[in-house]
Image (cartoon, rainbow, N blue to C red; front, side, top):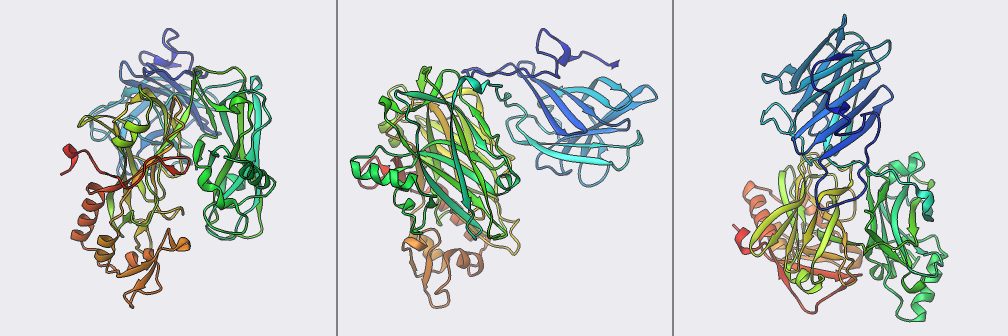
Length: 592
């Protein structure tokens, strides 16, 4: 072992050894000072790291199966462009190490400022180990700041110490400063498995819903954790997301009888009539209990002081499991088992947890023009809604999941109070559709009555080939802008707080459309009826191929949809909590 300087990972006064896991289980209102993580990127490459939030620095240790050079870096999107890279090894018993910056598919150039410092280097008969550190933010344009954004680890190994083309390489997404997931002994809990084995519809996108009844527990329990069942390659490939919804309590025996009948069926399409009758009850089963997105950790365990209530008063409850299947190749004749395992306990916790969904509603008025980057859409959870529906002391948010689709690049969740903007609840400037995590907040956040929340998403449609606009909707090729907030104490009178741009007349006029058919089957993508040159085409096709998207039109649309009135959506289990019409937009202090 060649020791170069202080070995942060080996200071037992601060953390455990790097080859063990320091697990931070409780979510508190203060950020963990020490964050210790490990990640196996490949059978031949492992990385361990310790972030000291008080000192604002980070130490990495990489262990690679090679006696040649080792490359490791941080990349915003996973490629070599703008990657912050170190390269090093041990040659003839002496360490070598350089801080580099990559601008493309070539050997990274040596950085003018050597901000990464080698701490230790070791080589044995099979592996090379390097340990190095730097500040979280060096203020060097050739270093990537380490913050709460999703980052890509990139790595490579060479056959010799002569730095040339690698023999192996890879990339993996990570949230570097998130605390590790807790190691939990699930044998202490009861398990309820919700399993679905469905023949996947022969279409590119399907939302499939199945009805389930909770076990006959005789008294209230708390749900304390979840495990998504992804135990085969098909589930990993075709599961885009799944959501477990709690159904509204039946108002009379006939509804309960109807629910029971659906429990016995294989389910059906959630949002379209297919003869299964499942779509008839979706609106009564909208309260979210758990959600998982593509690339997300299959496990979620709640902090020790919260749990989702189950079987209150000893009465069984009904749930709908919604699974979004992706079948881009339109493969027919296959099915697989998937679902979610729910962990429960009779040891009730201090607080009932809830989930609040904040979004721009997923409709066609949410438009990202063709060949456009950094195009921003936002949705609001109004101050009127939080004022009327929040508990007296507000709510405490401990976990947030951000969600958009293929065009999403950046997402932030903003909070306003009394005309001032508070620190963002969540932000990710490197959003990755294939790495959607439910992320524990570094500091639990309070949202009070009268606060306004705004979800803001930046999109890039330039990936579309041929060039096309993207509209809001359910398909992966459509877009969403949303956040899931896990919080306590649970609200029974609010679970969906959103807004939607509804100036249809103005929008049709700008798109050159005179009339549309928005009947049930066309509600996500209207059928254009006039003018004659557009008749029979869907709205998405018209805005992709028939509109002259000048820079002035793009800017006008963005300003109108961002800063003018949105219709206010303040719902509990599929029902508006107020009567009439109400509108919301940015607080006046933030309208240009």
